[in-house]
Image 1 (tube, rainbow, N blue to C red):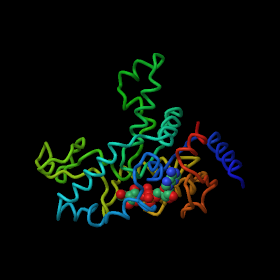
Image 2 (image 1 turned 90 degrees about the horizontal axis):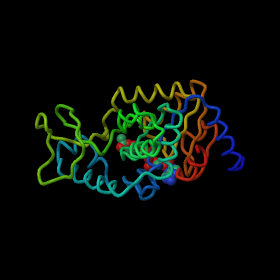
Image 3 (image 1 turned 135 degrees about the vertical axis):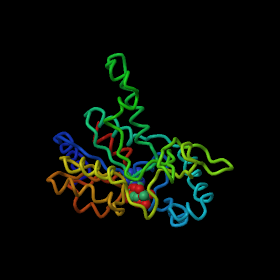
Image 4 (image 1 turned 90 degrees about the vertical axis):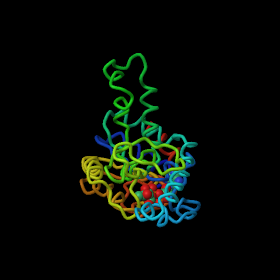
Length: 267
Ligand code: OAD
């Protein structure tokens, strides 16, 4: 089938769907300048994650592990949401129902959601919504973050969460209990948080359509989430530059950059 016929078919699936879930991966942020994990030039080709992104690394040499995350944060500080993030934010805000699930820890979906909600908040927006604050107005487009958020710290001891701060001479410590902080992300060898995974599965199981964007679909359990939609009788649209293990299960596979395909598909 031609690319334009695939796009038309995918647009019909979107128009006809009641509930929609979207699962995104590093590919959606590639056009924002955030390095992916497994492509040429991806993060893990240049750095050895087993040395930097593990609980053992934080226990053995927290300074080096922190310096690497501090560098990642500095890269992200220069990145902004791209048309792919913005199209998804507008889509879920417009539907008024949450459905966005991401493996990314870069916070760009959250930024796009807040920006899209602020853009909608004109004089016609309800006073109650305005009074509830920006996060409430953006709620439908805020993602379930399967792997956490690099822009937050978490205490290793008491689990308290804090906004990230630049790394100083001393390692960051918990304001409440004095324990060492770590980035609030899932490290290699760690399990995902049960309630976060349950929320993602619940969205996928109830969806008529799953949109999978910019993920190599090889890291579990995230890669199994679209299967929950398929098993419940729903459809699957994949947006990626290339084939993945999910492609053979996709109802429609759209080949192209997320920042171009998503606005064409969703707006
Ligand atoms: P990967 O780096 O494994 O895969 C990125 C995917 O995005 C590839 O399939 C690319 O073809 C595709 N891609 C690249 N640029 C794109 C673009 N502009 N538009 C559309 N697609 C594009 O990243 P993930 O699948 O997200 O986990 O990796 C999953 C997990 O592996 C990450 O969350 C991370 C890592 O281990 C943790 O850190 C826990």
